Image (cartoon, rainbow, N blue to C red):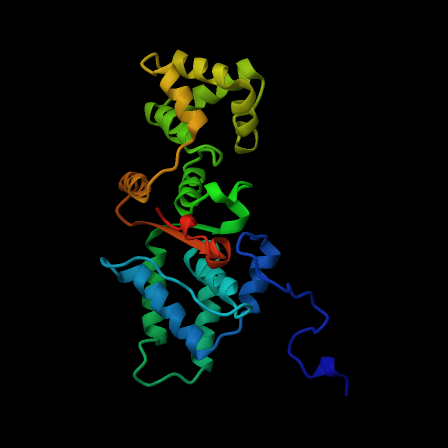
Length: 282
């Protein structure tokens, strides 16, 4: 008998050797959900996380996923994302509930099909925004300047439709004009006068080569802007403290509907920080 007849699945199928949280192609998503191997501990920890997200109202909101190299941390984080994301939630929960049915859990365990269904129902009624990323992949080229705070700030800015190159530009130009209802007009004037699209991929070069013109355009739209102060802030691109980042998150969340939740899922944090504690939240 050939080995291929012993297995339920085709043994010649492609299996991704390593899960990367930022890779979200449709075929990869389906495989990573369907190929996920559940254990009793994994089932229990998924439940703890999802239960906290769906029902916890106060207390600490951070979760640290710890494990040795190759233990499946990235795939675990990504499966949590699949459970949270509205596009993948149904399939992820279906597989999760099947795993619960097939595993022998403690009779006193909270992890029951009825409790999991309750969590799924709550999540279905919740507006969840997930920001998932590999820290090292989004940290930029100057690692020493990119604290976790700065990286989180940039990812929040990306979520808001702002750039990830310069926080000062995001706050003092993009957010400023967004709140005034002039952000689209600002981008249109950049395209008209500088002949470049105001996109994340282009902004770094635009600022390097045409900063004075960008500031002039900003001043045309709001003549209360202090051009010299704005120029200095952009060129300095100072570090921002964790309390400033928290204030930005609070402001963003307060603008959303009551059932809104914003969740950051970060991978490879320990590897990025290493022994350099200066990169931690500040």
